[in-house]
Image (cartoon, rainbow over all chains, first blue to last red):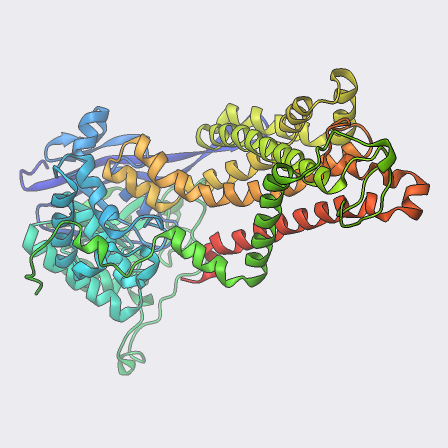
Length: 330
Length: 299
């Protein structure tokens, strides 16, 4: 499986959050936010990670960057395990892996002007020698991200949401990373701004050879930007494949309903489509269903699904799924 | 696009942007009531500083034949039972009252900041211990304890400051803890972590500046409550003891019916000063709170 082209290989990653109760704060259980996921991201490509709210996409993205301590598993970046790094090694690795957050309002410190927001990390890692050099570098980066040099002295509250997200992108790009986790990076923006930001991300990818882990719940956005798509459900990746495989030939029942639930922009197509709606809510990740985690909401579910967890199997070249039906058990 | 020569700090000079504190100041200035209260407060503080310096009377020296003179050209606010000039004593008392309030606020803020940040940052058992301690302190009958302490150690200014300082820190501790718990989870703190920013910068550049407005607001409101508590104790004769004047013990004549009925100049001025000062601190504090709260400002 090891491939020299792979920039990032995630192996059996788990992140369980303890649930504490009572005066003694005893651990009474675990929220299995990310439960055994594996995937690869090739250099210069984008992996889209989709799923409902609460399925663990965000936790997965943050755990890969070690913003959360992983419960178990590996994240191999450029051949080295992120979790084996010492503090100082991790710090220099931070220049190679960055993150863009969902909310451009809360992810920028209101007290600092753009110069500082974008330039702070440059100074921290010794990429610039003095303030003047930092300012020049910051201007170069923000202009690349579609802001003007005059805006560099302004504070976050003087920008619109889309512009703020550009600042966030500039901040992530300042250190010249190879890999960026885009954690719902466009979800907080309105549709016209979304496309601007996506185009910017794609242009930057072409220019700088970036790889993205693009986390989103919006399938149309993921379709635009991804090369590969992974579908997450309750902490697990249930289906993974190329964009074409997932969007034209979805095999897992969850992917099917997810695609069917996405809005269609042409109203003439609406009558023709099959209505497959997902019923109920996502079960609690603290107490996931036995067997296949999706069986409580799956229209095809059989007895075997309740008892045995399906294997994560390659069903076609590069197309993986975790389902008894797809695996031919029934 | 922009090929102009880049001069050092050219951008920093020619900017139209405002820092956070500039925004807070502008926002505060819009609140006419708060600005008025701030001006009154500054005026009172200036009087407390300068009146004792320029007054021809000493607050100590008394003249037996000048007892209980009503306000006149010579003694603007009259004289007290033993013939001391009340105008002078009023502002010397103001110095003491405001000084105690300032010292107590400094102590409580320092304790509150230390314990609040320990509690907020480290959580777990440190948090549990500190929070249980604040609950214990908050359940103590404040005035009773202060009276007992004064009875045991004497009623000096130092004892009062120490007592108030030891009993009034839980409020700000809770506020700072809460703010830190909130700020710690802010996405920009996560972003700092992802950028590899060191802990020191994260605390001093990202956490503290965002905490400061809340500390200032709380400290302002705290000044008002210290002044009230100190006045109450001194009025009861359990605070600063005469001959040192405070606004509280200047009110003491109001405890006697004969003065209350016939000699309003003895107790009305200190009462008005307490009322004005406390009200102004409260209005300024509220104004500051509105100015620093981003939710009231819109984006």
